[in-house]
View 1 (tube, one colour):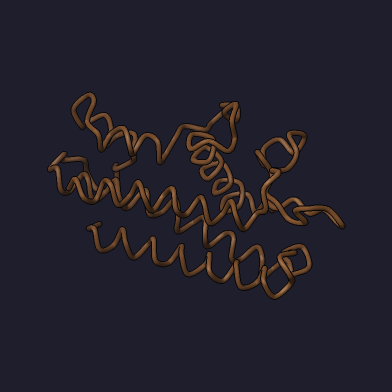
View 2: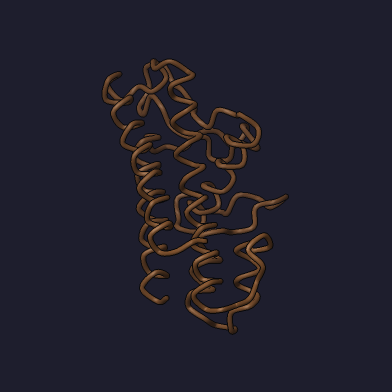
Length: 185
């Protein structure tokens, strides 16, 4: 059963993998492309798995805390939001954390909070379910390693921001919103 402690544990696990990614990047002067592909892929998969898993654990904690009565096997962020009263601040934050991405285009500003949450979900799906590499490598360019804007459509190209900067930002976004919801429980 998910509790605030299990939510924070998942955040801890994501942060641990993020630290490992940062360490890996530092060992290659920020050029993750020079790291062993298996090392890089394992860490990004685990980071995104735990980051999005945190959101799913948060939905379980809200269900339990608010006595929504959704069977544990049926708890999804959307189901929890449907059961919360209209305009509930927890519902709004949960919707931001877990946007619908299926057959939807990348938001117009991929660097906004909305765009970042969208990209987190898409990247987790692509990396954890399909085994795709979310990194875009450039030899002799700055940044040398960034993330695809939308790994579903490589034609959109790469982010202009360094991959590790974005991954750290993604963690801070999810962590901050999860802490807001946990305070409301």
